[in-house]
Image 1: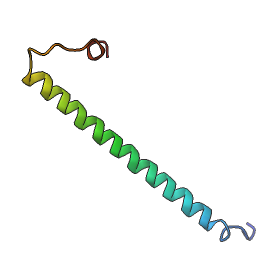
Image 2 (image 1 turned 180 degrees about the vertical axis):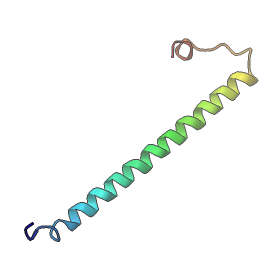
Image 3 (image 1 turned 90 degrees about the vertical axis):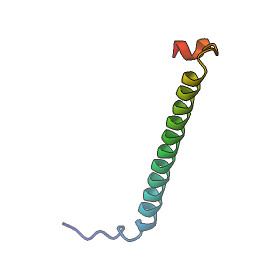
Length: 61
């Protein structure tokens, strides 16, 4: 096993990569939360207003 001279020099790169992964994961969670909330609101709207016609886009989905 040899001496790894570049380990310390690449610490900043690894840190930035880790931070990017973390931000992407947080954004994905946020989008999932927003989609879930919108779905719940749509379902509530559908249940509370049965006389309102359902659009074709929702039926085909």
